[in-house]
Length: 346
Picture 1 (spheres, rainbow, N blue to C red):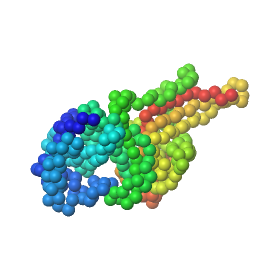
Picture 2 (cartoon, helix red, strand yellow; picture 1 turned 90 degrees about the vertical axis):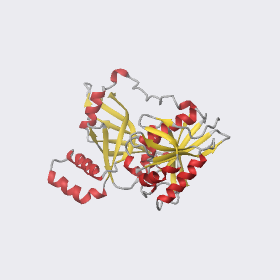
Picture 3 (cartoon, one colour; picture 1 turned 30 degrees about the horizontal axis):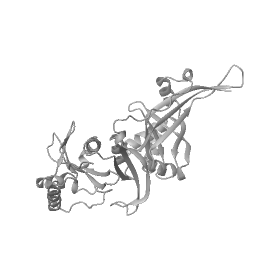
Picture 4 (cartoon, rainbow, N blue to C red; picture 1 turned 135 degrees about the vertical axis):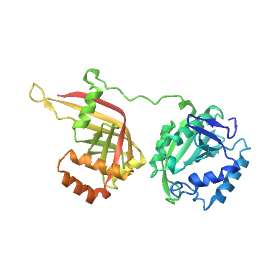
């Protein structure tokens, strides 16, 4: 490795730079005071701006060290820090680095954290020559996992009861990493349908997903056994996602919190072939990642959409939503690959 310290980095929207003593007030105002920001972190919200000033001053002094990596995340349009990203652990023997980050709540959901993480990962691998860069998050904070995936990291697995934070004194951690040789390597392609002539078009696959009301969802369940269950779904043509509803707890919810990858299979009603006994049917398999719908109003709308597939009694649906909506958890499957084929069962 060739330690180079906290060099200034730039992306399309961000400047990543070393902290200065003057950043303390912005740190406190934009993220360090907020208990929601620190919910899954190990440090407590700062009681007042003086705490943030002391920390900013300390980080500024550490910047002179070549093996110290602590960046302020600064949107170019704003000109002041909205979060931080840093190397929290270095293993010199194996040439690995672990990263940690946080960003103010006002900037969540804009892709800024992933943009910063990607830039730091590239710098640490290309310039400092780390062989592996990793990060981890509480399994109950899946949005952090989304950030890691967007930055090119892959989930290695779950470290059970391996961490603590302000939300849980003994939590499971999802571990992500990227190797130096993976930085510019695209993800492996999904397998194509073996019998090309039986392949359904993308349009036909979407038609089946829209028309069918239920399928089989497969997740990685307890003991790493595949867990497949029949479940109703709704395909939203606006965002191309599949939506489901569930109780707040259960096997599938625990499974998707541990591992977000899943597949969903839908079969169309079979047709009897000319021989009178064999069958033709269409099947579609969706590979993608599961995510809990956090927005309550959106979850209620999904519940309505799912209900309308079985009844058009608007009064009944609204009564159900009003009385049971607070007990329903909705989640989505964002497709990464959709494949379909016409099967002749004989």
